[in-house]
Length: 226
Length: 226
DNA sequence: AGTTTGATGTGATTTATATCACACTAAATT
DNA sequence: AATTTAGTGTGATATAAATCACATCAAACT
Image 1 (cartoon, rainbow over the protein chains, first blue to last red):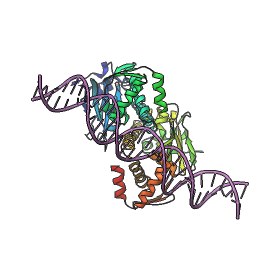
Image 2 (image 1 turned 90 degrees about the horizontal axis):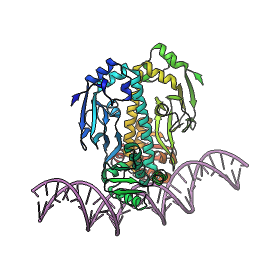
Image 3 (image 1 turned 45 degrees about the horizontal axis):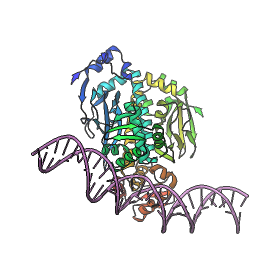
């Protein structure tokens, strides 16, 4: 870990862009940078939450331990803040964050974060906007989850990986079948079967973790209709 | 509708408590109060969103039109803000709000709201905290939805009505069976059956819309376990 | 009074998907 | 090299809950 200079950081957030020189040095003093390898936990559910995390680079999954199973709430791709709701909304983390790719993260002390909100309205405005967007996304995810069957949910997440995470029709799945099941709220076996079905229909091509989307339109239809 | 004086409002929010006299008059000038009877729509999905709503009194349901059915995202009881995420996060409402009880609501112009965030950090801090709490609640709801079966979800919502909305073991259901189904993400028939089952087990007593919780502990068990 | 309408209860059937069971593979460990 | 382990595919079975179908009832309307 090293203390970072936020003033010269090329990966800083839009919210931080609003900070004045003196505010940036306040931030820099309480901000440490850390690298997480694939599989490493950034913060853990039920632990005390005393930091806001800013993801500079990488990809992270948010996990909740439910009564029956562990569930992947969502994937978060850098650049973004992590743990704002879980840190500002309560003293204890409501979910865990685990890197699923090599990830660089800045740890910002919660009091510094609160201080920045207090002294810089443009900063807090950006944070509010990000929170609002998250809530809307979360509502949509919830509606999809209930109203689509597994087929549709799987299609939705494949499209999401393609368009939002990797910006390509071909990519390596960052999760194994069992984790995909946790993400689409289904079982490992069902995911396995449906991926085969999609491949048989020549909508996708799967080879282990490598995935290629052959027919984006049909995948989109499946994602919307069912 | 009438213009209200926020300075003398007894029902104002914690966020508004932070405002100075001059800021209160800014708010008061762009703030109008309106009453909604049961069943009346406060704002509508897909319409342009140009107001933040502050619920002074009453009870509201948030609705989303999904591909298959309409779904009740959540109930919101006064006092609280409505439509912060849907107004700040996008130009268009992502859900509707409908009164399910006589409700008093203040309409705050979005630009005034933004201005208040800009000029008063304590105000925006309170808004951030409320947004964070909402997001955590929403995550929990989502986990419950996936991991519990209908029985557990129904129990959860009955307890929620009892403890958070009506603060009593007896109350009149503000929704019909079909709407309860939309709330617990199930079908009208299943809700009907499960309510009967709970009554047979003497966990609750139902008479039309009137509901009495007889055995809170067992209901809590059902809510948690399954 | 008679009729339409909307809300509700309850049995029978269907269906999506979880679960169980096992086989296969590749990588890791002994 | 042999063995354990983790990840994966796929058939058979079980099951929660949706859907269909109908009956009942009360309120609203003619």
